[in-house]
Length: 206
Image 1 (cartoon, one colour):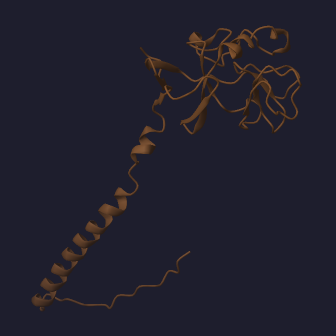
Image 2: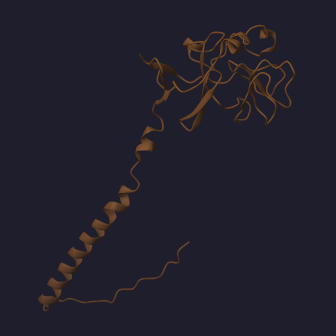
Image 3: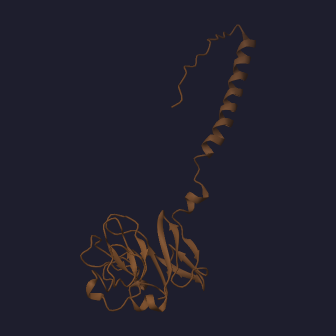
């Protein structure tokens, strides 16, 4: 913290019998006020919201053309990580056959927009968009592909996401497995396609 030094001003007395001194004081006061205002304007302008701050709550456009099959891109929306995964046919096939192991296999709870309330939890099955925050305590899970070196996961792991903080596991559609701390599926943010290879996250209005 910068030390604060007391500032003292000498007392100057002007009387009606001393007009020259009085005019000098008025002129000095006006000049000082103008200088203070000029100094204050740029200082206050530093508190104006930046373009990034103004856009923090707005939609984020993502180019998905460079995501390879099986690859994932992470972007930031409203301070949260959002995953965009290009799923392969094998990854889509792995979403079937383990519904009995899931807490909410039909996505009955409102963790996604209506258009993502399907087995793939996506507008287009091959492109999965989800907020990468565990629904247990807000940790960030990691991508855990099938056949990868995934300590703590079963040998027949079909692929999906794993939260190393407390062991919650999610399938490739972000649906949480039973007997894990996370109570609900991963959240799907509002989004829409703004073109063949562009997704607008945070805006689902046509």
